[in-house]
Amino acid sequence: EVQLVESGGGVVQAGGSLRLSCEVSGLIFDEYAIGWFRQAPGKEREGVSCINNRDGRTYYEDSMKGRFTISSDTAKNTVYLQMNNLKPEDTAVYYCAADCLSTDWIYPGQGTQVTVSS
Image (tube, rainbow, N blue to C red; front, side, top):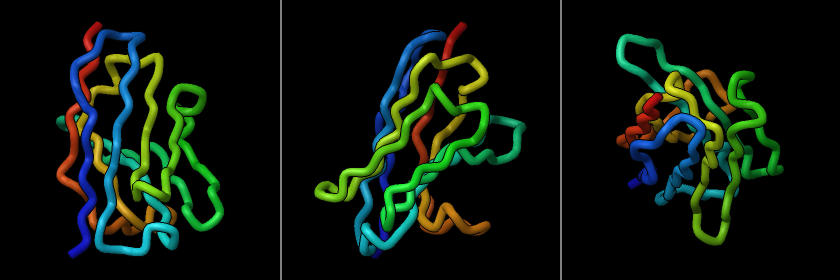
């Protein structure tokens, strides 16, 4: 059974930082691109970042460049999203999923809530 489990969300003041984790099981970690997307109430789903575990390349939505950093620990089958200088508009449920370089991400986790207060 494939599982992606997010953790690390919480409440933080604007300008603060959080590190999200996505622990992956049930698939060959090194063969997948794993990424993060988010969804805020009343808004469409938005891609955040993606890392291709085959070659280590990383991808970011423009508004996150310079603030968010995605990384991967193959020994732990875990992808991280370091989020710095958080803004209230970053408030959303953050999900990780596989196949983030395609149009149809698969195996999304249950999500972790990030709330940034002003």
